[in-house]
Length: 257
Image 1 (cartoon, rainbow, N blue to C red):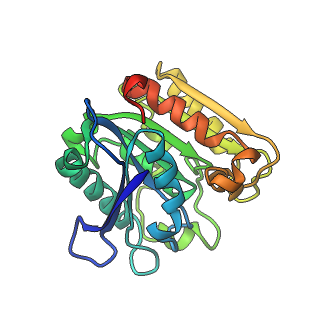
Image 2 (cartoon, rainbow, N blue to C red):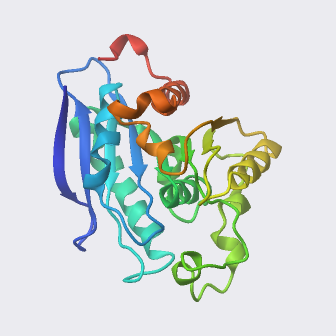
């Protein structure tokens, strides 16, 4: 069983709230934490629509936080990253009260949310000292290397940016980056898998451990909906995410529910 803590505020804006999912019952040891950022082209999405992700990961022995964040056109880059960073800082401060270990966090996301997770994990501007608690990055169909800016999604999101290179996760491939699991879908027509290939190569050149996985027979949305119970037979996304997160957080499987 999974318990839900709803509408925790990490800022003053109505979008700056998050939900927490945690396994029921007492645990001998604190559990690793996964913070999941949903996609939606930076202009749509709600945490309520991804409760299936929170419940699935919590049932596998993690404390899970899913934040909302401000969206385009009300804001543009970098406001949504500022919100995501604030959510991470909040989880670091409060995660222990739900049985989580705030020193063992994995950042995960799908599509635009994978971009958000990657920027926080790789670019030291956003998390400061809290970046040391990030033990892994899980990116599902993320855009990490998409210059020049073009198209109806990217152009309004990054309008006014004077240094486009600074917006690209691939630019921040550093030796101190956390291990990464980068997944794509063979039938994805929205975010090209070459984005994950580029980030995997850049991190690999720095000696960072990268697991690169491609799933057949699913598309861009199917990559994340495969986490839901009725669709898990479509791709082993949940199993692979959990295996990776267990590995990078040193999770003791003997305390799993």
